[in-house]
Length: 534
Ligand code: NAD
Image (cartoon, rainbow, N blue to C red):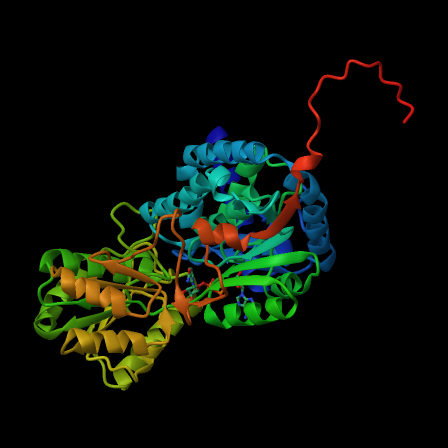
């Protein structure tokens, strides 16, 4: 009887679960997905359920199953979030720098303690491998650690005695309420580029994560609260275009940090700037790896393959374009062999080198660009379009793909592919390679592989790209420097993090004071009884 009873119960609950799933897939209505977690808003120190009627599904890219949902925050919820930031600003900006620093010192420890848990969430929602997800959190953590050096970063300048009895000094002060809009590809690192630097300088912050990967930021917000961040100093809203427009237009928001595509970034830069805000926008890329024939072949090929296909090419600093110079063109077959050896699997599976793309639409777009490359005359030396991953047949997987004989006028070269596709071009000389890179509109990152110091110096000096690696395939600077993408990869005047990050989130106040020597207090002891009368 007990056996039959438990069998019946198992059957009954499986049937119930299945019917929820069928209903939710038919209707796409969140009402029918009670088994899936709902992302909260973070307003005034509380994680609250949105009252919206509009929700966006979150999918696990390895299976395409719906694993959660995120609200499109209502206008009044977004207003409440900004009002909370505004209310918290006065106290927070007047909180001593040392107290703010203490919160960030506790915060960095909490992130370290929870690094593995945050990484699992990233893999679950974004698809990248667990090792890569840990790197995502770690690079963000480094910015938090850097924010802890605020006491020296935020110093003003002084010049005593600019004239008789007159001194000039500057204070570096916070702006007020700042906002951040983040992309899907680094769910932890990029939000951590934004609010810690802004907040340690005394600003309060409104974050809008990518609607596809909100989980890591929500976890990070809870840890920030646990570290002692006062209510209202950080608020989080969710949504898409309406939330973005709200941020661009709200009169109480003074500055916007954006990272994402050119389409969104240029729009946000223009709309935000028109409304008198400071805007910094890090955008798309086409990063060239120039391979000289004198390079260390073994290292170069390994680095190229890792940097082109790691994270399934969904990094703004992915080395998506190889330029083989002279004799290095003969290395192409070996490059293909190494790429073939990479293991494509769900990000949480042991040994996975690259995971799936973020969505079926992203996969379709990448496949379309590969096909277009072939039509326009490129040679498809390795084709990852039809890859099947056992146990994950519904995932958005594309295997490593190599297009050779690519010419600068081809669509696969002109557009950012943002997938595991390496396009290979040829150049006769270093000068030809430099000209090619400089003619490309993007200026995010580039690398040169050579054993000749003079070649490396010439390339770094003449190439018009914001971040250059010499035998370093992905030259993302540590946070004591700034992320210095340039040309079409960046809009704004001051870059993210480092000294420039502090400049972006602060304004200077200059004080010129005169204290005449003859007015100095007489220091003779007063021995006469004070009368207080006059
Ligand atoms: P995305 O532009 O689609 O989305 C980024 C953010 O903008 C999201 O929060 C989204 O909700 C919002 N958004 C999207 N489309 C919008 C629109 N039309 N109008 C207003 N807001 C919009 O970018 P993504 O697909 O999430 O991220 C990938 C892109 O980000 C790639 O182009 C990549 O190169 C770029 N990226 C750049 C850097 C860098 O530092 N240069 C770093 C990471 C990613």
